[in-house]
Image (cartoon, rainbow, N blue to C red; front, side, top):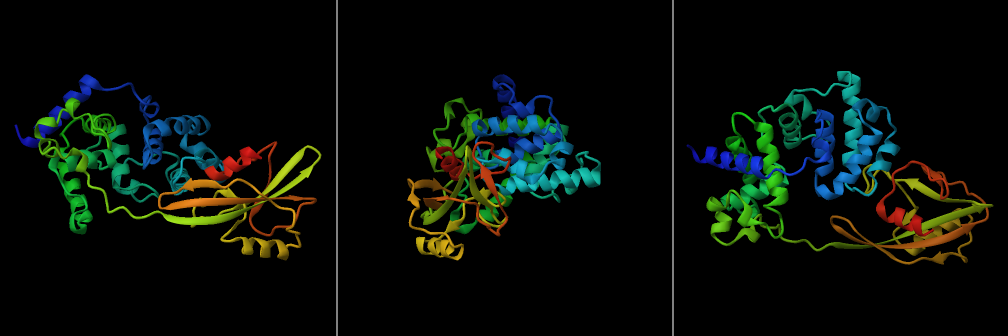
Length: 349
């Protein structure tokens, strides 16, 4: 029995014995459900995804309903999950599949990877997990298991792409001839439950005997982290223009450019400094002597440590803001996507 076959047998035996309760997207499995879950799970933990997935699939149980929806509603349901390009690509792909494939998910790998937001690993996951087609995957869990098992130095001398190539070759070689979907799911579960990023449960791992990182007492050194970059510290000012009439409270929000952070979501007018904010008020004939400085809001992005300084200004009448935006009714909120810090500030209002 070859080493690769032994590896696969151990994984499959472990999975049969210890497999956990199915996750929501594994029940009555379809290509649509698998695709949606795979996109949501990119750079996001399972425990976080479950709530968003269940809410999303309840509103859009089919790809046709997703394609028919407005992007604002898709982003509304995605709000708080982060990495919003995933939601925009999801919506684009749904419309392509409905328009050109009559709403039926293509079962061809080359077609799948041509769609927005679907790469090699995602396409492999959709086809193997749903149809048991013979395709490898290389998600974060698989990478972590293989780099520890073979003790690959992921960032050594800048050879990240070289190691990635090796990992893809290994994922292909380790794939059993039958039961591809079960094997891929088992590897993902092993990475999620046992070979975790922090505090891995090596004593429960079926690969322990031959895992090079474990044998060398270096499990926590793999995968080695890229040299940590200092978070960029950035301060921005938000202008909260509040108009109140009787019991109606409305606040002005602008749609963010798609290429910007929080692309496609709605946000308060943003300024890089207080002087720019004051100039904007002056240009719109608004007196700035009565605005209120609200509590500073801290928010971390992947590479930015953001300090938000909200400025509240009560208006006696609505003003004509020419940008793409809306007067957001605080009592009857419209269905639009909101970044987490904006939602937090609105809740306080």
